[in-house]
Length: 436
Ligand SMILES: NC(=O)c1ccc[n+]([C@@H]2O[C@H](COP(=O)([O-])OP(=O)(O)OC[C@H]3O[C@@H](n4cnc5c(N)ncnc54)[C@H](O)[C@@H]3O)[C@@H](O)[C@H]2O)c1
Ligand SMILES: N[C@@H](CCO)C(=O)O
Ligand code: NA
Image (cartoon, rainbow, N blue to C red; front, top):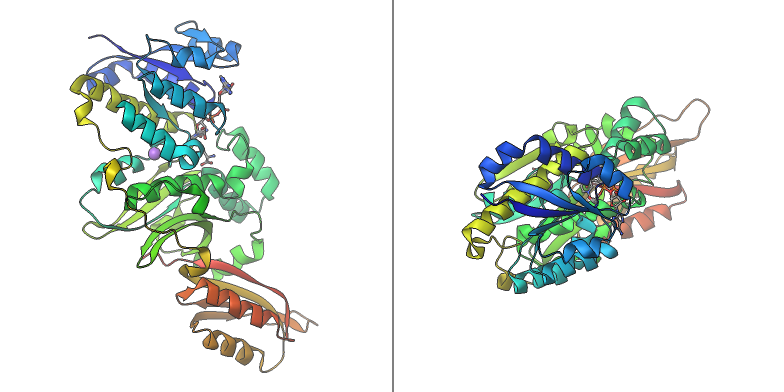
């Protein structure tokens, strides 16, 4: 049968992996897709790299625009990254009637509305399994596998770089900067690693999952984003003593008043499976009304795991090209004219539990003052850890875990606690999710 012709934009980490896996498993992939899938042309500004990887088995160009307009190309795979040129390339490919596969979560989280609308109007597909949790088929699960359910929440460890950093810091006591360098060398980190460590990459991914889970538009600008750069080793240690691990979690949760969409370091009970996801591994936990909770685990970054998702999308598109466009699955799980505009709740209205650490003068009555302030704010305490002052010290740490509370009220209580003469400096506040 006539092969489907793929034009590959960018042959770096993921592009290289895609080339390798597609070459290695060509026969088996063709048996699944119904037709051979061939990368016939590659555009990379590093022409020498493209020649090295392909060994002359594809046409190479430095001009990506030439490739997205090439009438011989059926599907464009965009693996350049970023919101810049990638956006123009994807829109031009769509305009030229080509299906698109991309791993670019930044592009879709920020410009998804425009890109999906353009694809819908043109009758082509933009597939993005690789954009969320790399090789884990979470897009397919949310879009197809769980389509009977009312999804309540999605929570995931969806950035390999930060999970790798947190694991290595905890287990080996290695400094942050060294571990970040390792993550970059292993090909996990984004071109700009601040996207990883400041939580932006995870926010791109949870934004996409929130659209798929709740049938809302893609709204990255409304996500609350907090990374791991301010996390202190002391809190990782105290959390362990209380039976929790700290993970950078992306959370999308349905509430009465709207949707919570947030990324931040989070205490999770160590006994939960997801708390034991270590290194560059990713995991996504989905709570839905009929099936209950389901957990998806695997490699969220790296050349071949990400290529696995890119190629699965290529297989879907190849089958679709044969079967006819009427078999298309909606990009965001819900029909394009059925999206609802549920508000994204501001972070002050979010409801979660909290870990609070404060340094206090070791005097009687301190704890009573603190608990009174919390009670005034309708914040109840679930657990407490009070350290003995060190030899010759007059100050000590108090760590409190709260039950569910409204963030705005917790912030107000923290301000009052910090105003107490017996409380030294700032209160450290980390959110906590029981995930049950
Ligand atoms: N690396 C991962 O583990 C991973 C996982 C999931 C998703 N992603 C996403 O996949 C995409 C690619 O990431 P990567 O890690 O493979 O990046 P990379 O930097 O390794 O590869 C990008 C390639 O694009 C080429 N390129 C850059 N600008 C170009 C231009 N204007 N024209 C032509 N070629 C150009 C570069 O020369 C390079 O070879 C990004 O969107 C990234 O977020 C990466
Ligand atoms: N930089 C990303 C790549 C996968 O999307 C991560 O570390 O998870
Ligand atoms: Na995926």
